[in-house]
Image 1 (spheres, rainbow, N blue to C red):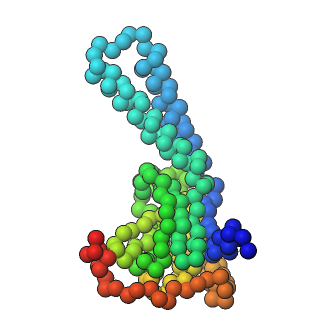
Image 2 (cartoon, helix red, strand yellow):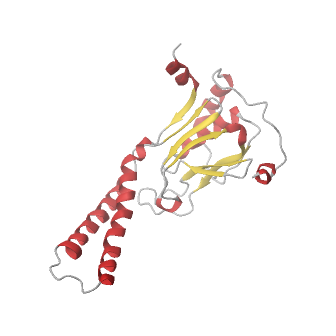
Length: 220
């Protein structure tokens, strides 16, 4: 068996965001075009030059800076379909684009499941998003490690996909505490949960080292 096939066999579950975000994308695109127009009007087409440096700095601040902010969000929303959350063996691999109010930096990396202390779904508190404005239970995946480090990922993923990820984590590492403040239940996942119990692909973690709470934090 080739290395590629071995890697594919190791992938237990893979989830990607569905194509949403058109309203947010169009809003950011419109603002970016407005900023481009304002740069042309105030910096290029203006025949009368500003009298001092402060005037130039003000013009740049009110035109270029907003353009960079909106262009940054527009570019990220073009490429957020590259996001993914997958469980490979006993690790979570992820690439996650945040909403405006949950951060600006695209997050990517791995999370060892044996280091997870608790995890679950958490409501996104504020929605600066037209696409998700009416979704009261829009969630993201939250995981806290033994060393105190926290992860907040999956803002563009559906609640059902995040719940299925959590379900797989619970089967792989039952010692981690599952907590959630979302009242919704997912009865359609009950069938998949029964299939998980019979799956031979899942390798359960049973030999994780037990340490008192806070030991990892004190070691840092």
